[in-house]
Length: 423
Image (spheres, rainbow, N blue to C red):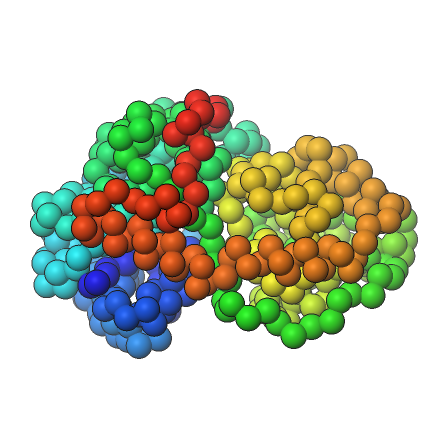
């Protein structure tokens, strides 16, 4: 097939979770014999083209009032940006021109910010089948998070979301097939009024998780249990990640029973505040940007203390390949795959007390490190790139042929048989 993948960001302008997932997927699809192209945005004023991993990448200039991936802007500028972002006809024309030249058999949209929902119209107008892959809450929320600092996870759509996301919620029936990284994300989107056709059983939805870097597992030995328990966090340093709770929980633990390494970067003011919160606790260290192969072999337990409905963080399944289990809050998509006591652990709540209790149980109790190591490595097979790409391939081929999606092309969204859970 001739495949076009589209995402808001792509190297060198972005390399977070969705970008990593897409880059691995495109490489796999090329290896399966498909002709692949990537379409993404550039902060520059002129189109760019380059080749990454042997795949052509086409960069389209963003037609909006500012490039959104940088310093925060004043409220009037943000309102103007979101007004244009609700449906951007200029980006529709630019994308349609490129898609007409590429002439793909199917286009796989990932994150749409910057292109807006007009991207669906561009492909639809050319008669190109559409597969939409969802990594976040953009379809219902301008911030893509459905979460606000100090307010928590949204229990309903605010006036801002109702206004700015109205076009994309209304147009969300356009994609021929939808894939999503977790049931929970799609539950919340349908509860917010998006993807009404899917909720009515008229638009196929498949749950396809993320992909690891390789099928082969790293050649490492099982951990040797000891003291202190080596804890780690890896990800963006942001209030939604629950890092304050994690630091406070480690501070409360008895001296010498655990150490914590925090890997990642964030906004300078917030990062400085975290350093201040951890001051005076030698067991807590900040290590900045570290690659997974460098980081995970130094851990006994990864902690994912998110206080928001995190869709499905890559760090969880990346750690599995190294035999490292995660301790996670019950929000978002991870509770769908963590088997408590086997490939990870779930705590009872999202606050600092629940996190402290969960850590204390693991430190004071006995868990079979060797067994958990083996179970994590087994679970990593579910995220092997060959498996994930095969599921995507089946979805893309079905969409291109305008045929039903095979039953084994990812898991069916559970909401197709059960009423979606609330926001």
